[in-house]
Amino acid sequence: MFSKGREQEVTKGSSSGESTTLIAQGTSLKGDLDFHGSLEVQGSISGIITSDDEKAQIRVIQGGAVDGKIAVPTVIVNGHVKGDIFATKHARLASKAVVEGNIYYNTCLLYTSPSPRDS
Image (cartoon, rainbow, N blue to C red):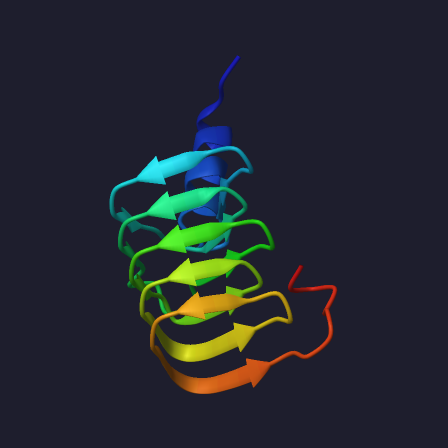
């Protein structure tokens, strides 16, 4: 039922940095989180969020919330963040973004009207 070739394919795909982790609406996570790839936050996270993957990004979707520091290369916010943001590459704040903290960034984009990619 399982072949060695399929196992190698799954392993190779998961280490590419292309994976997405979803914290769904209605889900609460308490504790620190370190991830690779992409993190989508529709629910809430209370803790420090980090990634040492230079291609990593976090998206805090409208209705999503983070209470704690975020240290990720690309940070996209259209929800609520209570804590400092350290975006070593890009910070993008969409029209519904609420940030209670300092934002440290290399480049920053501010959207005054909704962007389909950031909602």
